[in-house]
Image 1 (cartoon, one colour):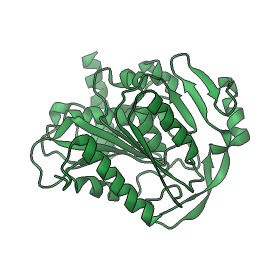
Image 2 (tube, rainbow, N blue to C red; image 1 turned 60 degrees about the vertical axis):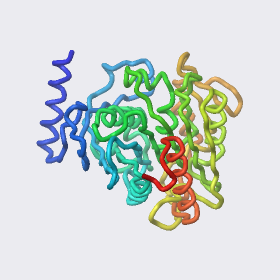
Image 3 (spheres, one colour; image 1 turned 135 degrees about the vertical axis):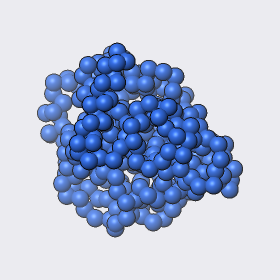
Image 4 (cartoon, rainbow, N blue to C red; image 1 turned 30 degrees about the vertical axis):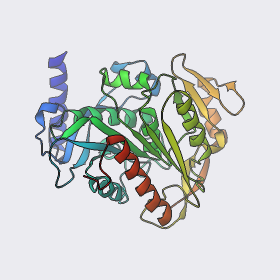
Length: 342
Protein backbone atom coordinates (compact mmCIF):
# COMPACT_ATOMS: atom_id res chain seq x y z
CA UNK A 1 0.00 0.00 0.00
CA UNK A 2 2.75 2.45 0.99
CA UNK A 3 4.76 1.58 -2.10
CA UNK A 4 1.72 2.06 -4.33
CA UNK A 5 1.06 5.48 -2.84
CA UNK A 6 4.71 6.44 -3.36
CA UNK A 7 4.47 5.42 -7.01
CA UNK A 8 1.26 7.44 -7.45
CA UNK A 9 2.93 10.47 -5.87
CA UNK A 10 5.95 10.15 -8.16
CA UNK A 11 3.65 10.02 -11.17
CA UNK A 12 1.92 13.20 -10.00
CA UNK A 13 5.24 14.96 -9.57
CA UNK A 14 6.34 13.88 -13.08
CA UNK A 15 3.11 15.28 -14.52
CA UNK A 16 3.69 18.52 -12.63
CA UNK A 17 7.20 18.81 -14.04
CA UNK A 18 6.04 18.05 -17.58
CA UNK A 19 3.51 20.88 -17.34
CA UNK A 20 6.10 23.26 -15.98
CA UNK A 21 4.47 23.69 -12.57
CA UNK A 22 6.78 24.87 -9.82
CA UNK A 23 5.81 22.54 -6.95
CA UNK A 24 7.59 21.58 -3.78
CA UNK A 25 7.08 17.85 -3.20
CA UNK A 26 5.15 18.21 0.04
CA UNK A 27 2.94 15.18 0.45
CA UNK A 28 5.11 14.18 3.40
CA UNK A 29 5.20 16.50 6.40
CA UNK A 30 8.86 15.63 6.98
CA UNK A 31 9.74 17.16 3.59
CA UNK A 32 9.00 20.71 4.81
CA UNK A 33 11.57 22.94 6.46
CA UNK A 34 10.54 25.26 9.32
CA UNK A 35 10.75 28.29 7.02
CA UNK A 36 9.18 26.64 3.97
CA UNK A 37 6.76 29.05 2.33
CA UNK A 38 5.53 30.18 -1.06
CA UNK A 39 3.88 27.75 -3.45
CA UNK A 40 3.66 24.22 -2.11
CA UNK A 41 2.19 21.32 -4.07
CA UNK A 42 0.42 18.51 -2.26
CA UNK A 43 -1.47 15.36 -3.08
CA UNK A 44 -5.27 15.45 -3.03
CA UNK A 45 -8.21 13.75 -4.76
CA UNK A 46 -11.22 14.58 -6.92
CA UNK A 47 -14.19 12.52 -5.68
CA UNK A 48 -17.18 12.86 -7.96
CA UNK A 49 -19.79 13.00 -5.21
CA UNK A 50 -20.16 13.73 -1.51
CA UNK A 51 -21.59 10.23 -1.17
CA UNK A 52 -18.28 8.76 -2.35
CA UNK A 53 -16.57 10.79 0.39
CA UNK A 54 -19.06 9.96 3.13
CA UNK A 55 -18.87 6.25 2.38
CA UNK A 56 -15.05 6.34 2.13
CA UNK A 57 -15.19 4.94 -1.40
CA UNK A 58 -11.54 5.77 -2.05
CA UNK A 59 -11.44 3.73 -5.23
CA UNK A 60 -13.68 6.48 -6.65
CA UNK A 61 -11.33 9.29 -5.60
CA UNK A 62 -9.01 10.01 -8.56
CA UNK A 63 -5.64 11.31 -7.36
CA UNK A 64 -5.01 14.99 -8.02
CA UNK A 65 -2.01 17.21 -7.36
CA UNK A 66 -3.05 20.67 -6.19
CA UNK A 67 -1.18 23.56 -4.64
CA UNK A 68 -1.42 26.38 -2.16
CA UNK A 69 0.50 29.54 -1.35
CA UNK A 70 1.86 29.66 2.19
CA UNK A 71 2.57 33.05 3.75
CA UNK A 72 4.35 33.02 7.10
CA UNK A 73 4.09 36.10 9.37
CA UNK A 74 7.27 38.10 9.84
CA UNK A 75 8.92 38.66 13.18
CA UNK A 76 7.61 35.50 14.85
CA UNK A 77 9.47 32.68 16.51
CA UNK A 78 8.39 29.13 17.19
CA UNK A 79 5.40 27.38 15.61
CA UNK A 80 2.66 29.86 14.60
CA UNK A 81 -1.09 29.38 14.07
CA UNK A 82 -2.41 29.17 10.51
CA UNK A 83 -5.58 29.69 8.49
CA UNK A 84 -6.39 27.65 5.38
CA UNK A 85 -8.13 30.00 2.92
CA UNK A 86 -10.61 28.42 0.46
CA UNK A 87 -11.68 30.46 -2.56
CA UNK A 88 -15.12 30.81 -4.10
CA UNK A 89 -16.59 30.18 -7.57
CA UNK A 90 -14.49 32.91 -9.13
CA UNK A 91 -11.24 31.17 -8.20
CA UNK A 92 -8.48 32.99 -6.37
CA UNK A 93 -9.14 36.70 -6.81
CA UNK A 94 -7.06 39.75 -5.85
CA UNK A 95 -9.26 40.23 -2.79
CA UNK A 96 -7.68 37.16 -1.18
CA UNK A 97 -4.52 39.16 -0.55
CA UNK A 98 -6.43 41.34 1.91
CA UNK A 99 -7.10 38.30 4.09
CA UNK A 100 -3.51 37.09 3.85
CA UNK A 101 -2.40 40.49 5.14
CA UNK A 102 -5.12 40.58 7.81
CA UNK A 103 -3.95 37.34 9.40
CA UNK A 104 -0.22 37.78 8.82
CA UNK A 105 -0.53 41.14 10.61
CA UNK A 106 -1.67 39.38 13.80
CA UNK A 107 0.99 36.68 13.65
CA UNK A 108 -1.00 33.98 11.82
CA UNK A 109 0.20 32.14 8.72
CA UNK A 110 -2.12 31.69 5.73
CA UNK A 111 -2.34 28.93 3.13
CA UNK A 112 -4.38 29.91 0.05
CA UNK A 113 -5.50 26.67 -1.62
CA UNK A 114 -6.03 26.58 -5.38
CA UNK A 115 -8.75 24.02 -6.13
CA UNK A 116 -9.61 25.08 -9.69
CA UNK A 117 -6.45 25.91 -11.63
CA UNK A 118 -4.70 22.56 -11.01
CA UNK A 119 -7.82 20.88 -12.37
CA UNK A 120 -7.77 23.02 -15.51
CA UNK A 121 -10.71 25.22 -14.50
CA UNK A 122 -10.66 29.00 -14.14
CA UNK A 123 -14.05 29.56 -12.47
CA UNK A 124 -17.33 27.76 -11.82
CA UNK A 125 -19.78 30.64 -11.29
CA UNK A 126 -21.57 29.82 -14.53
CA UNK A 127 -21.36 26.03 -14.12
CA UNK A 128 -20.78 24.61 -10.64
CA UNK A 129 -20.37 21.08 -12.01
CA UNK A 130 -16.95 21.84 -13.55
CA UNK A 131 -15.29 20.91 -10.24
CA UNK A 132 -17.17 18.63 -7.83
CA UNK A 133 -17.76 20.32 -4.44
CA UNK A 134 -16.39 17.15 -2.87
CA UNK A 135 -12.99 18.04 -4.35
CA UNK A 136 -12.90 21.38 -2.52
CA UNK A 137 -13.71 19.61 0.73
CA UNK A 138 -10.94 17.05 0.28
CA UNK A 139 -8.45 19.78 -0.69
CA UNK A 140 -9.11 21.62 2.59
CA UNK A 141 -8.52 18.54 4.70
CA UNK A 142 -5.38 17.58 2.76
CA UNK A 143 -4.11 21.14 3.26
CA UNK A 144 -4.73 20.74 7.00
CA UNK A 145 -2.76 17.51 6.97
CA UNK A 146 0.08 19.18 5.09
CA UNK A 147 0.29 22.16 7.47
CA UNK A 148 0.09 19.92 10.53
CA UNK A 149 3.44 18.46 9.47
CA UNK A 150 5.08 21.86 8.89
CA UNK A 151 7.67 22.49 11.63
CA UNK A 152 6.84 26.20 11.64
CA UNK A 153 3.09 25.68 12.12
CA UNK A 154 1.30 24.86 15.39
CA UNK A 155 -0.78 21.81 14.40
CA UNK A 156 -3.22 22.44 17.26
CA UNK A 157 -4.05 25.93 15.95
CA UNK A 158 -4.99 25.56 12.29
CA UNK A 159 -8.30 27.05 11.18
CA UNK A 160 -10.22 27.29 7.92
CA UNK A 161 -11.88 30.30 6.31
CA UNK A 162 -13.84 30.05 3.07
CA UNK A 163 -15.72 32.37 0.75
CA UNK A 164 -18.98 31.48 -1.05
CA UNK A 165 -18.30 27.97 -2.39
CA UNK A 166 -15.31 27.94 -0.06
CA UNK A 167 -17.68 28.94 2.73
CA UNK A 168 -19.47 25.64 2.18
CA UNK A 169 -16.13 23.98 2.90
CA UNK A 170 -15.71 26.05 6.08
CA UNK A 171 -19.01 24.62 7.34
CA UNK A 172 -18.59 21.04 6.07
CA UNK A 173 -15.10 20.51 7.49
CA UNK A 174 -16.74 20.46 10.94
CA UNK A 175 -18.78 17.37 9.99
CA UNK A 176 -17.16 14.32 11.61
CA UNK A 177 -18.16 11.65 9.05
CA UNK A 178 -16.44 13.69 6.33
CA UNK A 179 -13.40 14.43 8.48
CA UNK A 180 -12.88 10.81 9.47
CA UNK A 181 -13.38 9.52 5.93
CA UNK A 182 -10.74 11.83 4.49
CA UNK A 183 -8.12 12.16 7.23
CA UNK A 184 -8.57 8.86 9.09
CA UNK A 185 -6.85 10.41 12.12
CA UNK A 186 -7.70 12.67 15.05
CA UNK A 187 -6.55 15.81 13.20
CA UNK A 188 -9.21 18.54 12.94
CA UNK A 189 -9.58 22.26 12.29
CA UNK A 190 -9.45 24.42 15.41
CA UNK A 191 -11.88 27.04 14.06
CA UNK A 192 -14.15 27.70 11.06
CA UNK A 193 -15.06 31.00 9.35
CA UNK A 194 -17.63 30.68 6.53
CA UNK A 195 -18.02 33.98 4.63
CA UNK A 196 -21.10 34.60 2.43
CA UNK A 197 -21.26 30.82 2.21
CA UNK A 198 -23.51 28.66 0.09
CA UNK A 199 -25.97 27.13 2.56
CA UNK A 200 -28.75 25.91 0.27
CA UNK A 201 -27.33 22.39 -0.03
CA UNK A 202 -26.59 21.10 3.44
CA UNK A 203 -24.76 17.85 4.20
CA UNK A 204 -25.55 17.10 7.79
CA UNK A 205 -24.67 14.88 10.69
CA UNK A 206 -25.28 15.81 14.33
CA UNK A 207 -21.80 14.43 14.96
CA UNK A 208 -19.62 17.52 14.56
CA UNK A 209 -16.19 18.59 15.85
CA UNK A 210 -17.72 21.41 17.93
CA UNK A 211 -14.86 23.73 17.06
CA UNK A 212 -15.73 27.47 17.33
CA UNK A 213 -17.34 29.02 14.25
CA UNK A 214 -17.87 32.57 12.97
CA UNK A 215 -20.55 32.85 10.28
CA UNK A 216 -20.37 36.09 8.25
CA UNK A 217 -23.29 36.99 5.95
CA UNK A 218 -24.45 39.98 3.89
CA UNK A 219 -27.92 41.44 4.35
CA UNK A 220 -28.29 42.23 0.62
CA UNK A 221 -26.79 38.98 -0.71
CA UNK A 222 -29.01 37.78 -3.59
CA UNK A 223 -26.61 34.99 -4.63
CA UNK A 224 -26.41 32.52 -1.75
CA UNK A 225 -28.57 34.74 0.53
CA UNK A 226 -28.19 35.18 4.28
CA UNK A 227 -31.21 33.33 5.71
CA UNK A 228 -30.10 29.75 4.91
CA UNK A 229 -26.73 30.35 6.57
CA UNK A 230 -28.43 31.82 9.63
CA UNK A 231 -30.57 28.67 9.81
CA UNK A 232 -27.55 26.43 9.32
CA UNK A 233 -25.69 28.25 12.09
CA UNK A 234 -28.61 27.53 14.42
CA UNK A 235 -28.36 23.84 13.48
CA UNK A 236 -24.65 23.78 14.36
CA UNK A 237 -25.34 25.58 17.62
CA UNK A 238 -27.98 23.02 18.56
CA UNK A 239 -25.41 20.26 17.91
CA UNK A 240 -22.98 21.91 20.35
CA UNK A 241 -20.78 24.20 18.26
CA UNK A 242 -19.96 27.64 19.68
CA UNK A 243 -21.07 29.76 16.72
CA UNK A 244 -21.79 33.43 16.15
CA UNK A 245 -23.45 34.92 13.07
CA UNK A 246 -22.76 38.52 12.02
CA UNK A 247 -24.87 40.12 9.29
CA UNK A 248 -23.47 43.21 7.55
CA UNK A 249 -26.05 45.79 6.41
CA UNK A 250 -26.24 46.66 2.70
CA UNK A 251 -23.58 44.03 1.90
CA UNK A 252 -23.88 42.06 -1.33
CA UNK A 253 -22.20 38.77 -2.08
CA UNK A 254 -18.40 39.19 -2.36
CA UNK A 255 -18.39 42.37 -0.24
CA UNK A 256 -14.59 42.06 0.00
CA UNK A 257 -14.13 42.14 -3.80
CA UNK A 258 -11.82 44.65 -5.48
CA UNK A 259 -14.57 45.79 -7.87
CA UNK A 260 -17.77 47.76 -7.47
CA UNK A 261 -21.17 46.04 -7.26
CA UNK A 262 -22.45 44.82 -10.62
CA UNK A 263 -24.83 42.23 -12.07
CA UNK A 264 -23.21 38.90 -12.94
CA UNK A 265 -25.83 37.79 -15.47
CA UNK A 266 -24.87 34.15 -16.05
CA UNK A 267 -23.99 33.12 -12.50
CA UNK A 268 -26.31 30.39 -11.22
CA UNK A 269 -28.06 30.58 -7.85
CA UNK A 270 -29.88 27.73 -6.15
CA UNK A 271 -31.45 30.02 -3.57
CA UNK A 272 -34.94 29.80 -5.17
CA UNK A 273 -34.83 26.01 -4.72
CA UNK A 274 -34.87 26.36 -0.97
CA UNK A 275 -32.63 24.37 1.36
CA UNK A 276 -32.02 20.71 0.56
CA UNK A 277 -30.54 18.66 3.40
CA UNK A 278 -28.61 15.43 2.93
CA UNK A 279 -28.63 13.48 6.21
CA UNK A 280 -25.33 11.66 5.89
CA UNK A 281 -25.87 8.48 7.92
CA UNK A 282 -29.05 7.31 6.12
CA UNK A 283 -28.30 9.44 3.02
CA UNK A 284 -31.81 10.81 2.84
CA UNK A 285 -32.51 14.11 1.07
CA UNK A 286 -35.12 16.42 2.59
CA UNK A 287 -36.54 19.68 1.27
CA UNK A 288 -36.53 21.84 4.38
CA UNK A 289 -39.18 24.15 2.92
CA UNK A 290 -41.92 21.57 3.41
CA UNK A 291 -40.18 18.55 4.97
CA UNK A 292 -40.74 16.34 1.92
CA UNK A 293 -38.32 13.63 0.81
CA UNK A 294 -36.48 14.21 -2.47
CA UNK A 295 -35.76 11.37 -4.87
CA UNK A 296 -32.05 11.54 -5.80
CA UNK A 297 -32.95 10.51 -9.34
CA UNK A 298 -34.99 13.70 -9.71
CA UNK A 299 -32.41 16.17 -8.44
CA UNK A 300 -31.35 17.33 -11.90
CA UNK A 301 -34.97 17.91 -12.84
CA UNK A 302 -35.56 19.81 -9.60
CA UNK A 303 -32.57 22.08 -10.10
CA UNK A 304 -33.48 22.80 -13.72
CA UNK A 305 -36.87 23.98 -12.55
CA UNK A 306 -35.68 26.40 -9.86
CA UNK A 307 -32.08 27.51 -10.40
CA UNK A 308 -31.94 31.09 -11.66
CA UNK A 309 -29.24 33.16 -13.33
CA UNK A 310 -28.22 36.70 -12.50
CA UNK A 311 -26.81 37.85 -9.14
CA UNK A 312 -25.13 40.94 -7.75
CA UNK A 313 -21.56 40.87 -6.50
CA UNK A 314 -19.15 43.56 -5.40
CA UNK A 315 -17.44 45.53 -2.70
CA UNK A 316 -18.93 47.16 0.36
CA UNK A 317 -16.06 48.96 2.05
CA UNK A 318 -17.72 49.23 5.46
CA UNK A 319 -18.63 45.55 5.45
CA UNK A 320 -15.10 44.52 4.45
CA UNK A 321 -13.43 46.61 7.12
CA UNK A 322 -15.79 45.36 9.82
CA UNK A 323 -15.55 41.72 8.70
CA UNK A 324 -11.76 41.99 8.70
CA UNK A 325 -11.85 43.29 12.26
CA UNK A 326 -14.38 40.66 13.34
CA UNK A 327 -12.38 37.80 11.84
CA UNK A 328 -9.14 39.01 13.41
CA UNK A 329 -10.80 39.33 16.82
CA UNK A 330 -12.28 35.83 16.54
CA UNK A 331 -8.94 34.26 15.58
CA UNK A 332 -7.15 36.12 18.37
CA UNK A 333 -9.68 34.83 20.88
CA UNK A 334 -9.67 31.19 19.77
CA UNK A 335 -5.90 31.00 19.25
CA UNK A 336 -5.16 32.96 22.47
CA UNK A 337 -3.21 35.67 20.70
CA UNK A 338 -2.43 38.99 22.39
CA UNK A 339 -4.53 41.99 21.39
CA UNK A 340 -1.52 43.51 19.67
CA UNK A 341 -1.29 40.48 17.40
CA UNK A 342 2.01 38.70 17.95
